[in-house]
Length: 383
View 1 (cartoon, helix red, strand yellow):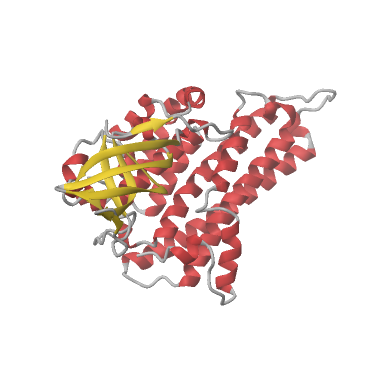
View 2 (cartoon, helix red, strand yellow):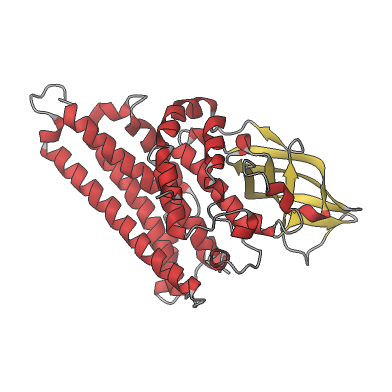
């Protein structure tokens, strides 16, 4: 059966071949990005009328997970592309032609807010945006902007997305990190670029649409895709540890690694922590998806439980990786061994605001009848 997940699995050998190059050049290889675009993977979360395939949430997560099993940075690029198309492309009402070519890749950023000054026929846009993952492989950039006119900020107009095409934006070489090096999350600079009226569109998740995906709580959508990367990395780490344990005889020992109780306990605990957290997210995701399709109401408690599940699942994946890395010994420190890169990459996932540990405490506040305080539960109410 030809599904986004099976297509992602089929691309794993290609993704693995380019993982080292991605790491060195600090952005995704063009060959991998083109393969994602050719298979339509960037667009699986976009509605049909926005040139997408409208895959259900679990399919989205498992597609990202499959790529993350091969390389976390490639999966991060794919995940950001999926979010950009899924949440921004529906707003391309008057500029749909920009997305007609299936090989077009889009990047975006909400990490900063630029300035759009109203002029005849459009806007003059300037600014610098951080964490623009996948910018090297994109020809369209969605920039969060505030609207100005005659030198004054129009406070009554909320933030919008300015849609820019190359060469109206340039990449600044700013992405120097220890983990997810190949995600290419550099800054993007725009200097007084003209954007026509038709290319100033609704902000992320701000387009009203009949697709159930566009009526799924925004915070939950932003969280579940990050979880997919953690799942793939944890799965790859456990598998790499099993492969190592089957052949390694530690120094100053006559027993193989897999014969050691410590290694046996490590792999068992890692599997349990990873699988239990994954199962809870899948269960709650299915419940919420069924409600959204039936146009039911998702309560603040349900949103809190799902956020809790996502943040805890990522934390559990980090713990699972740490457990097998510790049991692997010095082998996990060797550059080129999968465990070395995975242990760096997965910690970056856990630091992202959408799945960070502080969301667990905020979910607990809601479960105790207190108001949420953090962005994911207090600032993103959903549809």
